[in-house]
Image (tube, rainbow, N blue to C red; front, top):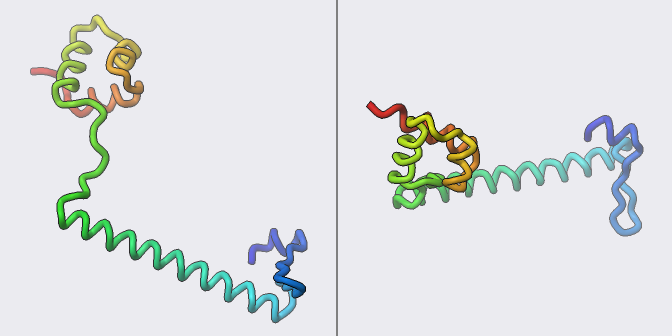
Length: 112
């Protein structure tokens, strides 16, 4: 149990029983609770990884889809390269955030 909670005098009451983390029985009880919490967290993490592996094997886990289609990305790049549009203009026109415009420009690279 973190020292901050001990210093504040935190105790756990279940029914009429009060568990103080400073006495040996209370310390053991808190350690057991922490062990079960960590075990449950590990199980959730393991199940998540297994589920993702199954989805990846079936081809269903593709990650986040781009906000703009290929055609929109090319048009955004073309408009930016004309020099007539600012990043803010493009984000407003395409209804995306400024960081999305920057990422799209970085991904598409200049037109040759």
